[in-house]
Amino acid sequence: MTNNETLCKIAGVKDKHFTGDKMDNVTKLNLLYDYYGDFLTKKQKEIFESYYLNDLSLGEIAQNCGITRQGVYDVLRRSQDILYNFEKKLGMVKRYIYRKKEIEEILVILEELKSGLDPDFKEKYKDVSSRVSALLKEGGV
Image 1 (spheres, one colour):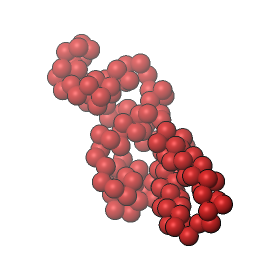
Image 2 (tube, one colour):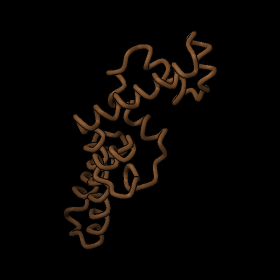
Image 3 (tube, helix red, strand yellow):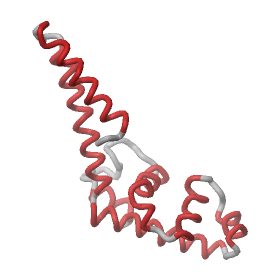
């Protein structure tokens, strides 16, 4: 099973999409890096960031780090495996995706309820709706 297939399984997605929407491999890895990047060594972080965040080629990174292109590739591969394994064990990204989806659905339900709401509860509705929206926007899920 590939890392992509593993992450899809972890996230509970059947169709090879990370969040139900199409998400490319770089985006998936960046999300994993946001959660688990501190578990990588300094060298792994440097190479990962150079490749995925700064868009440097394997050759450029190899030259900067004084190693071969194969060495850079191996570090990237190991780093990816580490990130996927932490997700497999801890499931933080899976929980984040689930909570984000739930909050989005709550906002839809709140919007549906808005039209039939008693005028006395409109202020409370606005408060609840704005708090839930803030959670989604701030990533506080």
